[in-house]
Structure formats: C-alpha cells, structure tokens
Image (cartoon, rainbow, N blue to C red; front, side, top):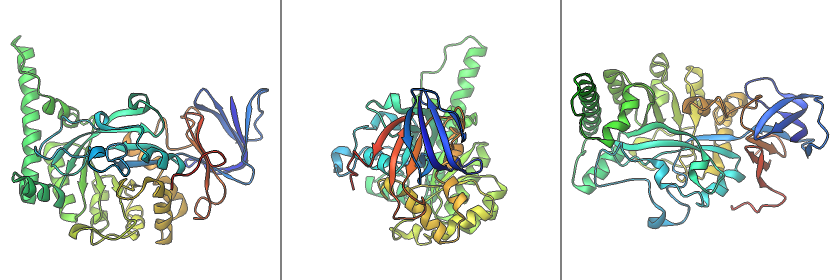
Amino acid sequence: MKAIVGGTILPITSDKIEDGVVLIDNSKIKALGKGLPIPDGTEIIDAHGKFILPGFIDAHTHLGLSEVGIREEGEDTNEYPEPLNPQLRAIDGINPFDKGFEYARCGGVTTVAVAPGSANPVGGAVTAIKTSGKVVDDMVIKNPVGIKAAFGENPKRVGRDQKRTPWTRMSTAALLRRALVKAQNYIKNKEWAAKNNERPPDRDLACESLIPVLRKELPLRVHAHRADDIATAVRIAEEFDVNIVIEHGTEAYKIADWLSKKNIPVIAGPALGTPTKIETQGLTFKALKILKDAGILFAITTDHPVVGIHYLLLCAIMGIKQGLDEQSALEAITINPAKILGIDDRVGSLEVGKDADILIVGGDPFDIRSYIEKTMINGEIVFDIDKDEPPF
C-alpha cells in the first residue's frame, strides 16, 4: 500500500482537500481525505506544499502511430490508397516504445485516445490506452472507443493527390453515407440469413467495424474544423441515427448554441500555434470559454504530434488566459475527456475505486513555472523528476 500525504488534493469531481491523504492499494485509490489513518508498513510519498491531481487525458492523439522524429519509418497514421478504411485498427500500429510516451508521462498525461489520421472519409478504429507499458494490449483501457471519420480539406487533398475520390466535400459526405448504407445492408443480410436458416454473407471487416456505430454502441469520431463541415457531420449523424463526437472543431464556437441543443461533444484543438491551413484560420483559445458557456461537453487536445503531448496542461493554461475558469480548464483535460471516451468509471478524477493515475505537481498547476514532479499510473511511479531526465 502507498500513501501520498500532505498535499492539496484536487479531486476534480469534489471539493479540494488541504493537507490531504490519498491511499493506494493494488493499483486503485482506496481512500482519500484529511487525517486518514495510515496502516503500518505503508510506503509514504511526501507531498507537503504540493498539489495532487488526477492524471491528464488527451482524447485525440496519434501517439505511437506517428513516432517522434522517425519520419516515414515511424509514420502509420494514414492508409492513403483507399478512401474508406473502417476495418483498420489503431491498436495494430501503436509502438509503445515511441519516445512520445516519455513526453506524455513527464507532461502528466496518463491516458490517451489514439486515432488513425484524417486522410480518408473513414479512417478506422480509435483506442484508449494508458501511457506506460511495453505491450499495447496491456495498456488498453477500452478498445475501440469510436470509428474515425474526416471532413474538410484533408480528405479532399489526399483524394486529389492519389487521383481518386474524394475531390470535394460533397464526395466526402457521399462516401461516408455509402459506407454506412453498406453496413446497414450487411446487418439486414445477416439477420435474414439467420432467420431463414440460410448461409450468412461472407465476413466483411469494414462493415463489421461500423455495426457498433449503427447500433449506437460507439460514436463516429469526426475530424471537422469548419462550421459547415461540422454541420454536414451532424446532418449525416441524424440521417443514420448515430452518435458523433466532433474532433478539433476549430469553428465549433461559431455554432456553439446549435451544437449544445444537439448535445454533441467537442474535442477542441490543437490551438497552440498558428493556423496551418485555410480551415483553421479561426483558431483561438477564446473558443473554449464559448463552448463552456454554451453548455457543451468539451475536452482539450494537442493532436500529438501536431502539438507535443507534454503541452496539454499549457493548452489548458492558455484557455484560462482567454477567460476559461480554472475548474473548467482542469475538467477539460481530466474528467471531460474521460466521459467522452466512456472511461470515466476508471479515470479522470480522484475517487475511491478508480485507477491510481495520479500527479504530484510542485506548485500551482496553472503556474507555467511549476513542474510535474511525479506521475503515477495504476499506482506505480512512471516519472519522477528526481530520477528521470525530462526528454525535452
């Protein structure tokens, strides 16, 4: 058993606890509070004068798929030749030894969603994993957590480069509809065969991957920056009665009230840097407060490696500079992404029974001068500033 003692606990879903104690047993949080009795033989971790937080979560990354500094040999985010690839699975391309995982741990990011890229209208299955481990199967929290879809400039550009569809936004939308209709027909044919004791259709991995989406067991995770692309994604979602999450949502703030009425979450970012294309010209950290004020469930993403994953907390700080309150900023990198990913029963806050993914921060977490001194995943210290050299 371990006990983190003396720090200011920020549980996220409840009030802060001054001079608190967090008890950890068998990778889980056993208890937290003030003045808790500590069993004999417990390993003590002193956090006096420090802050204790849940590990951060980035709900949209390409960690382990697009490896830090490796170029083509470590680039596994997109399958360019075919426009529709729902059968692809991010888990099959993740390298746990990618240096990006070190960046994540020293930046306090303990959980990530890893997604295929946005080159195609449908890119494949997204997985949620912890950021420590040697075999990706042992790192999984939930797989899959959605199927990647993409609108806007990226599918158009790649289609033209590959001399195949899509060349227009209309074609991008039509291709997604085609994939969903094909999966609907596949379900009907399987059901008919079972009912009539006939030979079922041959297995179709692409269609099978979309069945949980059509049954509303998984969302479409939709890459969309421009407001009109977001609206197209919503239009298709309503047409097929499926759930969606907007990824990036650069212009989501322009239609925030409309999205709020439809109860659609947004994973916002990356906003640290300058616009890199036409559809991101509206990039601003002011968007976060607008999403919050509209009542939208939102999270902040780095889109690693577009922005280094170790800057996730900095992105939250930038949101505060532009009017977002501190509590909402913390929620946007902890409990909100956990809710969007459907893993908030395990991570995203400090609560009894949840995974002991815990950070010890040397000062005010929103002071850029403060260091994350220790990162714990499943109750084990995976980064210690006193022993480990930060990789940046």
